[in-house]
Length: 339
Image (cartoon, rainbow, N blue to C red; front, side):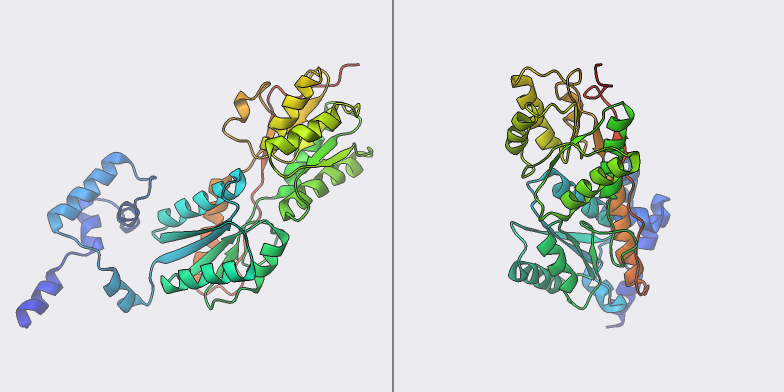
């Protein structure tokens, strides 16, 4: 018995690994969690120290000793869309970087039963906190009513200053897009929005309207799509007959459809009509013409979401985060109107 106790006392710790590798405890944690943010040479040095020392992470023992599992959960819906998928990825990466195991539950739709079931699954995995990424109005209400007994942070469809939230300033992004077009000299800006049950679509529409009011301009025609390129194409056909000289489209996929419809109608972008999108898809720079659009910093959003939940786990009663500011990326799809 004494020999077994002696062997247990001599088992190497994560701190021993950090000392041998010449890195911080957090860097060792990042390597163990598979974070992509550790340099290759540093990872090799940590792995060599783990091998030399014979270190084995004992998760069960850590949980018993600290009453902390080191696990977080993410619930996300509509992962086939660019924004939700990028948010989920960013939150996972930020969680790994902070030393947590992160489990993702993707849902095809948000209902009371699917959300409750996802939360129960994450609780069964001993998750210390849950991050919910939903932009649908009904889904947000359900997320806010979820009471799993652990911290819950919402990262889409949120407003500035709200507790237990992190998000991107959608209205600001829409205002930047609209302001750019008005400052180029367009008298008004048309708008192709997403589904009105999506909170972010409503926020982008509000920003488009607010910027016209601030500039003393009348708003242009408004059309509604469903986030797809096909719906943008249908909106673009209507726009080609409207006489609009500028349009702000609420996401880049719809903007791609708009560009196609305008081209088929014989309209030149940007000579006849300027187009601005939203999201800054990796492909946006290769549209024809390259698309002016609004960039969302999803990596920063992920870091702020993890920061909020860590602060909650550390005892802060109503943690919150400032909204992440988006940025306008100007490319070749916009110019001053031809007189």
